[in-house]
Length: 174
Image 1: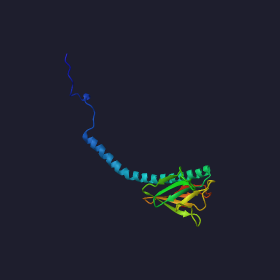
Image 2: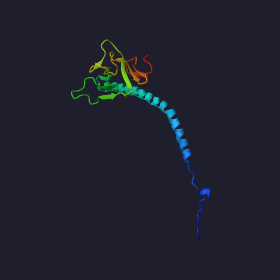
Image 3: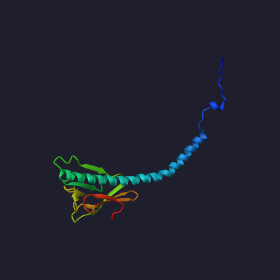
Image 4: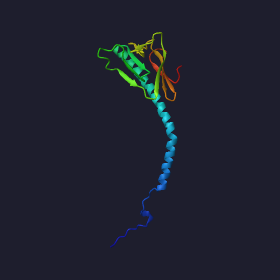
């Protein structure tokens, strides 16, 4: 008994895309990506500013909590020129503060201390600083406002609360 294979039967052929269909789909994908990419990059830049403001606020809250728990004043220093900020004990032990933290700003962000309290603002190593007292309150001579700005000129403001218990993020300085 001999078996033959039917090669001309359309039901035995596999369904596949033609080269023209693949080129058409790839062209549509390129068009869609080229339209979405600029909007997506703006979204990502905006998220970087928001993320940095939240990170700053979290570090301020951590410094405040640490001041209360350890009973030692904590400072959150701000170095606008270097694009960094950090938190450490105001009077560290001789070996330094092992829990000290340092954070660098993203490359497209800038920081500025806009408003300081009193005639002699709080400084730490010759840098403006927010001082959290042992009771958790913000020192009267600490900066009241810190501004974070991205490359597009969008700003977020970290403004001291009226009861001097921390900072909140605002879209404006008022």
